[in-house]
Length: 201
Image (cartoon, rainbow, N blue to C red; front, side, top):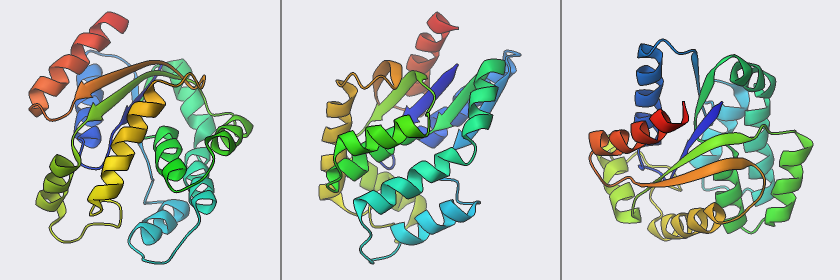
């Protein structure tokens, strides 16, 4: 099983994905955790440099970088999904959202994802927060050290709307999509997630 957490910056994907990982592990289940971009690897470090740079990089180049980052351990994710439950803090849906906003055709991204044989997601948890809440949370977490996406409220508004749009599409990459109010408390959000997981596992 593959479970993915998505949302705009500051939505709480890292917090909730790690809570679910710990919760399922405490139940004795075989659970694996990955987060993207992987800043510990060369491709991830390049992505981070781009996010903090004012240099213009094409949407296609960004999409290829992000998808290459996923592709580095694609086989591992597939194998672990056969053994147990794989939890991913962000995945290719972020690329679908951000890079289409930047002008890359959705069909092109879909085509690339099919070529690399991205595994189908069982559950997507989309944590929905407003751009204002996103900005407040990131400032509290990082101070002034925000990347180009995190400090752009207009972009965050577009990203939020695009996530909602993508959630209604039948692209064949996920089985179930759950939108959760990410502005509730951490425990309230997690209780909703646990309720859904309890029904599925």
